Length: 424
Ligand code: AMP
Image (cartoon, rainbow, N blue to C red; front, side):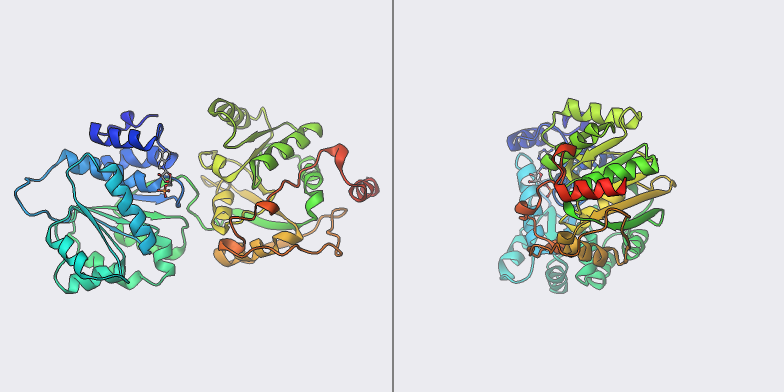
């Protein structure tokens, strides 16, 4: 799919080309047609998916199709609420970037900086307002902001908004919006609170998921198997053979890890393919096609590569390594248990990953079942290396730790080999 096929006007296509984008990301390809059709939308998408362009492009397109007379003072046609000033600034930047060949004015308002320049900008008239809730309410109270002409309301990172305690502010703002408007809600996770919020805001929404929205679907049986890092590959092979699994999506943290694990499985005579960002689109499409048609049993993927994977009856998801961003766990396990089918998500966790596990359990508000497998019990003398703290228990920059644990069968260390022999 191209941006042109999404029915965007020339000024937008030109701005997109200036940015060097050639194809829409999955969230853009899915969301833009719904938004252009005027529908409300719930999108399960997090930062990094291209979601900002996913709503700003169709917003600008719709506004350019129905331009208001220039002579009149501009009314606020779109309100975009974000939880943080950083996100407000980013979204504001995107609106300016994509709208640079269109005549619309936008402004960003957030707290912690002088209010007067924001008042001046608002008094000059804006079409698109990007705001954090607190400062917006301040300005509403000062009667500088009039929301009665808003045609489109966007709640960005709604889950974070709720985490930050903005629910009352959001409700106050919504009460000031006209009843007839288009609503778009973006959230990386899908808690009961978010569900309630969606029900109160969205009317018959289109649902777009580039990443799974459910925090931990009831249909997905989740568990953890403790195992030493070096023995994960052989344990995975063992589980696949013992349980006669026929279709398994396996997640690794790195592209290199995905390749090595896939090669390892092939050497064990288990059909497997790897997909990740370094593979050509053709190779990815083929691997996915083979996997869907059961020509290949195991698909090893990195988080990014798996975003577009949509298989309704996928029975097993294995986290060969836990993601260092806890939210990614939610997206991974959401690949199974879909469309009413039962699914199973098993995480192979070694001592180095305990912090990630804690972060995940905190996020999903659930303690996962933890097991060991006979013959693969972790060696208690192996201690964790210290890991950096960050979102989800680990930092994004843990590259030194993201090395693959996959080993070829020949290269297994002697202790593993002996233990395997004993097992047999
Ligand atoms: P977002 O998820 O909105 O924060 O966007 C993540 C990044 O993806 C931003 O740096 C965008 O500039 C970039 N981006 C958005 N859409 C595309 C696209 N279609 N192709 C390439 N990059 C994109």
